[in-house]
Image (cartoon, helix red, strand yellow):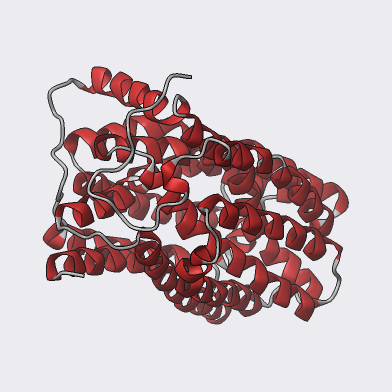
Length: 424
């Protein structure tokens, strides 16, 4: 790797480190925080659903920012929005506010994350290409996942311990502070390389253009279309399972106030992701096609969710959680590389945002439905139902595989990526 590409990778890894550290301060306690504010299981996961609804609503408009103003501008807006809305979340908790206010602020939290989705990943791939990097994308994304896991471990443990020693609100304040620091860092060092923003269109025309490009280079290209269509099921169930495991593990542990245990569980999951990130490119090398890795990991994830739902032993649940995190970490970089290799540079942030939008759609509908099932039949039953729902997305991955796209067997980043989409 040449020095310029190495610098790009270092900046990317620092951005990932800061973002994940900020987010992970609350990952281990978020559901407990919402329940402590007086919300029911249904309301807590409905609040999460409003968050993902915000991502759906704002995904395309904020995609305009990344493609017409710049990836850096999009990232900076994301840090500011998330910092402010995280502080508002803390205020709602103090006030034990009615659910309607949680819904409104959750939508605004979704707005903050849409400024991130697609923009940082597109910035990385474009910048690496411009610096002459021709190595493996899986390797870079795998390193990103390792850094994510380390940051998640540190943040989750600290968040749980700090909540135990103080209260459930303090980790949210720490998150807002780190996001401010990341804004300063990105403002100084982040530059849009290998990408020239298109400012020739007005906001409305640019929004229509982004939507058109998303369809042309996403849904009209069959190999990309089926990957995107699989996203709602895996993403919706994955988000629900991650947050439902917090109270479920405390239920198995036998102490609903042991917040440090909830943080420890998230930390254990992060270590599994570190191992998966390190091994992702090696596991990918065992198979001729990227889709083989993704499909295999998805099926394993489904089996583990069912076993988690049927299990009643705390430590066995921790072991299953480790395996779940590991297979998730294996699939993530491979799916990212596969999707990026099928998208032209100019439309990369646009289509990646569109993929994120479909994933968010799953969260909008699946999270409250599974939350309601937890109210009726318990967390274990909801995880089993979640595994069945995730299974619906597997045929779409097989459909993408059948298109025999060159990206399915590619191992190195090439100067130019995907061709124009074929006609449907």
